[in-house]
Image (cartoon, rainbow over all chains, first blue to last red; front, side, top):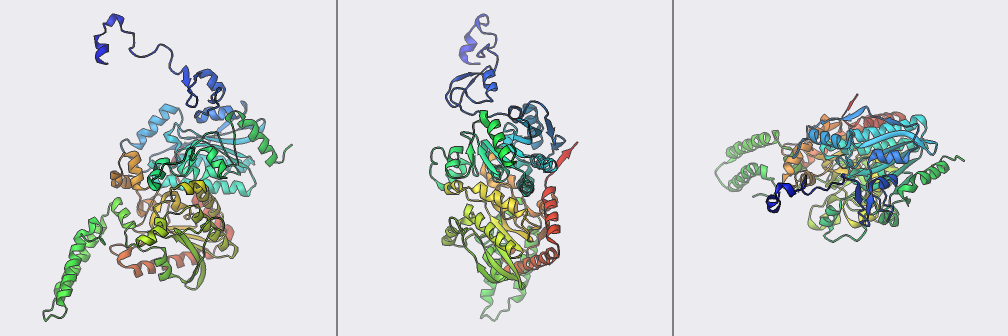
Length: 284
Length: 319
């Protein structure tokens, strides 16, 4: 409470000083155009600003909910949950960080895998949850991704991955690094069986996730404006000792440098990926 | 302070200096100092043994980066014959930080490749401190595919702080280059034997580290991020690197404990650089042994086992 608030008599002080009476989160400011947006409308447009098409970050469950057909879905690999094999501790215990992330997101780890349909076409889709420890890949993310790929092998289905991750999870150390090898090996199996894998990189996709499963798509797709890269901006700036060009590591920058097949608006993702998959699968 | 010794080795350095001094005095002198010298040598050895019996993870990290630690070309010269370096990724450039070629190991034809750091300033710059750019990983893949075409086993030596974080590296697809190697190495139809001989720095190390047998030299490290990088993110201070090294467990025995590497090749007392010929001989024996074992497997069996190894990585609960 500031000195001024203390001087205000109780009778004229609002019920909760400073807080507005509007329910929290009813309105959202677009980070792109600063327009004030009605929350419900934003949810309807899958977290894309209706005014300027800025793509806000979206949680994994909302992502898959908007991407897959409403009926006939089944979540995969939920039986796999995280442990703390290294008893890792920095300023907090990894165990506690996991509990906090689980409480805040309602998810058990940073990847959700789901079998479902895309305009009637059976697919498996997985999505990273950036809210869960920065979407970092540890043993559970690697295992769920691999099980999703194996489900595709068994049922001859295409795989679609929406990545949003800072990279490998430090709290599982080398175990996390090895998930890069494990998931890439699973994708090699898909490739040799001729099953399509489409990687959709969303904001942000960096580090060990971009340097493994995210860059290995038969198609590498990105959402507009997504940050995609191997090393973090700060690390690069400290190494090369120069300021980075505007738009460095943006989806548009990667497209220009030949690293992506295409940039697709989230609201068109379903229809465009469906059309491409049907061509790759030689379906009419 | 003797710069050839790390801070925790300074007591050893002092004894060694004393021994050298006595040797110098002893030369051309009637007084026989050999008894005293051998007494001090014994003391130095037991001191080294005791210091090296309880190294912290951070001390091992320092050893793995020791300025005198043997590098790729030291092992090439000591262990292999008929080495011919093969250059370039056929697309953009020849990367000096990741090198390789054809060679023979005890007469057996192989492709050998690895990271090369620089010894002096000029070479450090030429080798980019052992940090490859995408063209380095693409050259490595080209050499591995050459090995596959001619049925040659691949031996990789890992020693890098990490893949280079630069503007050009990003523009040319550092992520894609690393990812592609992980995918292709998992299905390469010839034996791949990987050894971490110094620093196993994250994705930049793993990009030549997927194989049928992965070993680490005793005082090498393998980690998802450098101890300094981890410390600056999680502890908000790079000076907490020793804590980060301990928490991540970057050492060979920790990696082995989680079945992420298959074997640890012991180093001479005081580390690889104290007896380079002995280290090279131990590695040569190790590679030959693995080569003979893996050569006996059919391609199907080789790949089946490799896939099973990769599939097994990870620790999680299962309801």
